[in-house]
Image (tube, rainbow, N blue to C red; front, side, top):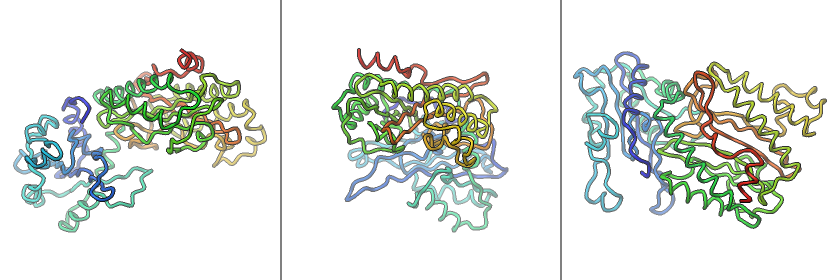
Length: 429
């Protein structure tokens, strides 16, 4: 891993939060992700299961975590299973964690090799009443591949069909939504690296540059600062490409007179940041570009101010929609009759601003959390309004990451340039 060691107090505290939500006489099991194949003998880069990382800090494959607070021996309340290293593995892949190293990372005293899982855990199943199993229950998930987690859960339920099985995801979504100070610091680090990347490319962008060249500059800056890379597939969209919400080809040349939308951000220690900025390719906004840009910026600032403790998403989204409607009327994109006769289920403003304004952010860029519960201090959200005018080949989206506090909010990206005049000044230095 490129990131610096994390204080294991984070993972110890996270396990305490999780255990406090368990039913009596319960055992919970978490399994690492697969290393997925590509072709021939190739494989994709490894990405740890976010819940397992949250609870243990272990960032390698073939890992399992067992949590059993009411275990009869009073000792094996937390057990970690890791891949046994060898000289051969060390030569070909690099050495894996030793048991003592795994304890240092996680704060878990009892560590075994993963091939010992059945032998160690077999007698626990005669003691336990409830077994908590984990599964990806993100509302936007779409998974066709059977994951390691799915395979494990299916096999265990077949082997022990009479146990009472529970869902860990209900607990994980609740506790992961509220970030600790350790997590906030890691996300801030990701935001700081993202800022370095953005400032780097402001002097690089000019007519004739290719979108993929900008991508290359960003990844260079991110990795140079201990990031593992992009927190998500980068969107570098010049001109009309910005009207494609998830444009990822990044293969067009930037032309003078066009705007370029940059939805690109770094991760750090598996924690995401999420930034969007729009800049003029030639360093100078046209009058129309600046009008639309400033309209989006006004909505963004007003939406940010509404992210407060006890705010509900229903009221928040309704208020943002009303703000956007007013801006679109002033831009001449909507008429009064469009609003008067709008479908309440798909308001008129949705023609030009069709996506949501905010989502949870943390270990996953679209992090877990409930949109049906009021906002709480410690939650981190994106704020990302946009206006997309396909007929003008113009798409503007602006996005920062906002931490809710007990007395308002903190913009974790407040030092990243966003005002149109500042953007122009920096691009023309």
